[in-house]
Image (cartoon, rainbow, N blue to C red; front, side, top):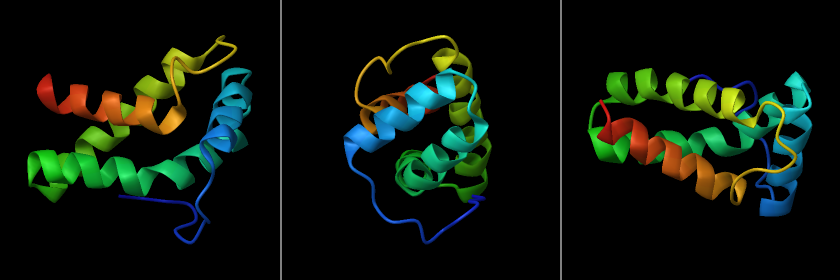
Length: 96
């Protein structure tokens, strides 16, 4: 798992959603901040479901690529950001 800032503080769900809205408008820095805030949780989900660090790493990239692509042009995330990322992580494991 690669993070740009492993010590970022926990964010409120509203803050995460605001980052996704900015990312949808093309703000790459906002997406990086969203990644930094959510990656530890998403990685933990993937690792617990796969039991293999290398597989969790591989799936992690796909989850965030999918999130970036699906948010493009949206005005809001489909549900709270961390819940949405958790759902994407679960689906990525189920479809492997």
